[in-house]
Image (cartoon, rainbow, N blue to C red; front, side, top):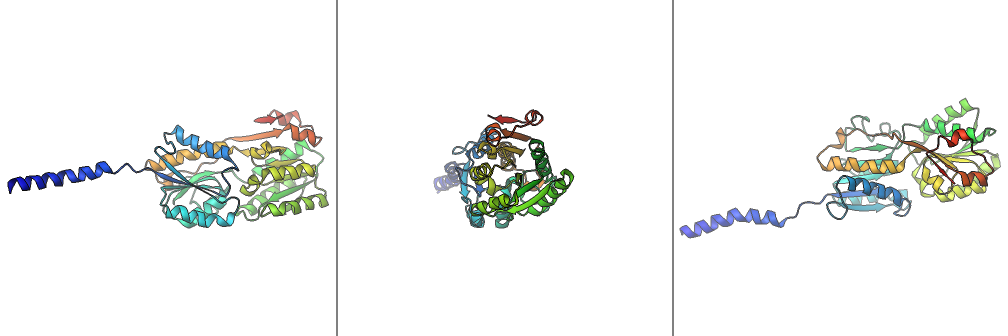
Length: 327
């Protein structure tokens, strides 16, 4: 009997140890959530992965990433966000304003790291303040504010000083559109520029917008930074070239696709910095306590090949300020 009791006692002691040894360490799961497609901006996804690797997180080794792409169909975002919640991911990395909104509507508990989130995340109710977000959302806002559009108009006037009428192309589905339009109107008055405000909710509305520009004889175009427009950046660059319109965009990716000029924050930098939020949250930080970052790196990019095709000479005063000049 004594031997039996000792054997049972030993088994009870060893059982938990055996069970613990058989359970592998939990590998964190990240849900990466975008309105785009894997092929629309692979360099940005790679910037995010590189940022993770620099912090010791290697996909397939000590971290798993579940990807969900809406392929340009913004109406799919709520369902995709719900899928990630059902997968019980540890963090959702949400791209752009619409993605952040869908993720926040899907969960109030899973931490959300926004990349290129709204210029006004407080006004949209994503966070309580930039310094102390207060909920489950933190990350990176894509702009210091709508005043960046004023700088875009100024640059257009520098390269085309005779232009008096400028078209503004925006996406009415964006919740910050009214904020941008108010700001650009203020800038236009100070520059003596008349505006033609045009909207496009999808690529099927691009041709109509450019036809309206031709009818109104606008002299230049400002494309408001938006996820929809970056998805279809090559098409927009082609339409601007066909219409012989000098155009400025919010992101360098437009210029790399053949657009004339861009001024805005570096998307690669935002995607790389997002990895630091993932790292901090996985190490125990709460999104409510992590201040939202606004970009500190802005870049002017100019495409001289496009300028030549339009018959434009870019002033030296603009070229010397450019982070990159594409020949």
